[in-house]
Image (cartoon, rainbow, N blue to C red):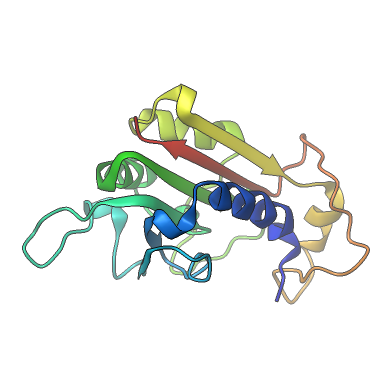
Length: 185
């Protein structure tokens, strides 16, 4: 299923990731497999809540912090109890020059899987990343949405599947989804 809420975000994000040279990157994905087919040198997935980024950076069997060139978190940060702590822990798991990509919903129904805690605009995501240690000059944040997509979010079943003819224009005053990329200095 191609979700209407994610069409623009996914295209923009895939283009950005492709520009990094995915075949050179060791990647961790938190709660998903969205990036599994992007041709990374190494891709591993850590599923939340079994692997909770709030409790500390992920470690190997010897207790050493795992390090990555890119960490992906697609539609998971709204479900975690301590997003600021989790984002600081992601920063700790990145190699110097590494990237964190995060995407979150803004205007969608409550969905407790297992809990539903937060919503961010693009500006809110940028602030979250800066507060976690990322340099403000190395953060890009975007949002997309419009009233048409927001109204489709009230339909069941949810989330709405993309249909030919759905309006994909952006109304900056009506975000449905936000995403950001931040580079560790």
